[in-house]
Length: 225
Image (tube, rainbow, N blue to C red; front, side, top):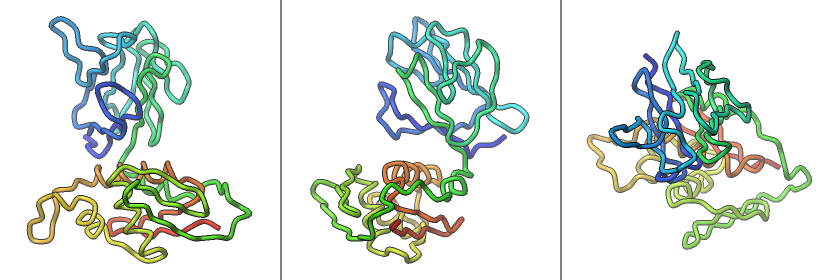
């Protein structure tokens, strides 16, 4: 069974944005805790049904289906028919109860998909000035300022200080997750954690930065002109 796919939370109490769930079982129930019932992923939201939706593995792919929930399950803004399975694709957006809960589905192949050139929103600008504010965790690129979490900032700080140069994944792990234990040059940072971090950064900087993945080795970041 494929164990390289995962869900990332965009919205969904009690989880923080960016929390992720590795898909390592053949059936996963999304829902709300009830008396004597605990779904695999439990959300604290009264609009979510006890058994709201299921994600399951079938014929080499993960699928999703609505479990006759009261307020519906949506895939990329299209409401699913009850009990009708739909195959999930990388970067699919899952919404429960009209956006009360929002999740992203991602697979291990996310790097190849995200290497496609983003839409350029600064076509006229030729400035590539970079300014870093470590206290506010902000980076200014082409006169646009972006705010990041601590780990997003540290990751981009290293990549942009080595702009247009190769930075290995091990260098990134040691810099971003400096609190982790390293044994004989290896870290306990999982590929999913690194992929999720890069996904969030790419999403925030779409159109401004191009982050190229050198598969299995590292990254090169460049500024779109």
